[in-house]
View 1 (cartoon, rainbow, N blue to C red):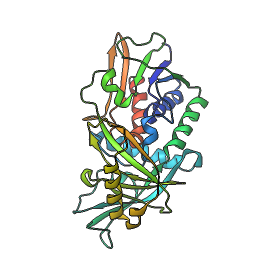
View 2 (view 1 turned 180 degrees about the vertical axis):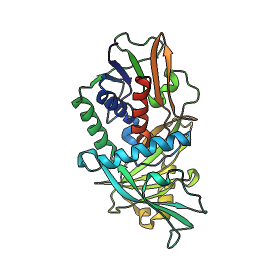
View 3 (view 1 turned 90 degrees about the vertical axis):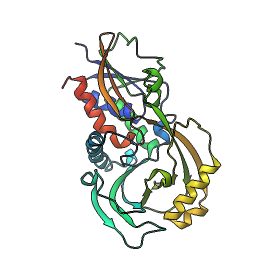
View 4 (view 1 turned 135 degrees about the vertical axis):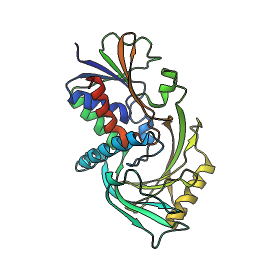
Length: 312
């Protein structure tokens, strides 16, 4: 059997999958219509946190594995990953999160909380500067012998003859490519500002969604999670809403100087699709539908793809 694998899609999911396949001894080509800095992954905030993804028992396992790998990668400054003190705030008492044992230094806090919050989870999570991280992933992939090709495909009905197996890492585009009606966009908008705040602050409840993500030269403020909204234009209403929500966590952010505003569409789905099917007698493995958890699940999912490729 030949060892040629085609990965379609060059976001964080496709690159991570390509790297793990190369490390397993496969010859890998990635075809994609977009490469960094023009992928959805480039616009991600990004942080380790299971968000808008299912099923929980699988996302917890994939997320836990990815947390450990991101933590290891954070020792290399070229990756753009920093393990960061994180505070997540709630307006009512919460049970333990299902991912509690995956993160370092988890504690509950209830004193001196901002605004009308009554409880806080304190833990260490990773902040990932996506332009740096995607460049590092691309360089790692190429250094292992991977091939990058700028190419657009229109469907998976006729799989390319040169490849033994094809991996579908096309994110939101998978909806059209495989006629998957469960795929939908979850619109996000973020602001880049200047700030010297070093901790990450989160409110991950959808109606009040707010995240304050420190990076080396800027800070990301978000956000919104608008299902089935395809609009890529900047919304002034969303900008004002983001500033209002973030300033409830840290009041001085109300007057933040905005460097840049960005919009991206998260690849939503009722559950992550990670499975194999046969198309024209050839294996097609799907790895898409990660919602707001692409980075968070990336390495765990990539390693499961390798298991499927090897029929394990």
